[in-house]
Image (cartoon, rainbow, N blue to C red):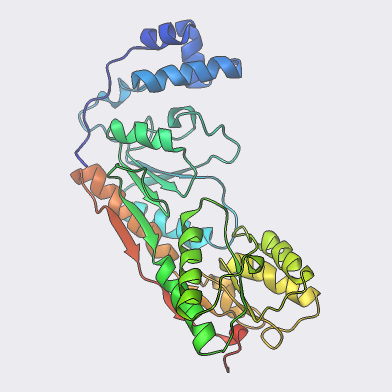
Length: 342
């Protein structure tokens, strides 16, 4: 990826003309300084995007063109996974002399450009985008204006050279399911995937399917229930699974938060882990070793991924280039929840 080039020279008047509104209305929308109808605001932001207009181009026209801020865009902060991830990102930013700005898009209209958020190209030198927190068209726009972006646990849109950082999800899952089959003798292994469209979940499912196939076990869709990477949804998923009255030897929860919900559901049903049903997860969050029984899982370097995303982003900002893909290794962690001896 090349270094920054000058922003478009479009003016606020150009935006007003394209959107069919006054310059004052454009100013109110951009600066969030007054009430504007949602449909009008959307026309303004569409014009901003179409013209590649930077509202703060004058302020950014200083010699350094730097704010010394980096941004993190994510939908929400929810679950044990986010603690170490945020710790890694914050530490990486601080150690390199940058401040970290965080914006959650959970309640935002995903069709709006980044400039309509509290965080964007107007107040950060680059951003890290977590999973699906920013829509693809906006990622394309930012890339086309050569604004530094690093994707975390998400691949870039096809044909775009945008750095991204992730785990070895498929191989980690393959090792885990292989262990359950080869070392513990389980064959009826249920799977609780994460949200549809999340790449971590997709690759973990691929590892699950590959292991079954390699051991001559037919994939059974009745053993797959969405766990949502969420404790409550994991609890609901296991309750649904148990209601089907089909044989289950073990449950592979797509992440450890889901595994905690699964454990609650199994205990509520009067089932013992691992004596009646084994349970495993993915991530090795802080609580995993303290559960009863301690959770067998795949250790993912969550904090390191955050630091690495920052390292790649700063390389983009300062040098104009970064690694296309950083794939961090995972490690199998065997504990008693799978039936292994203490």
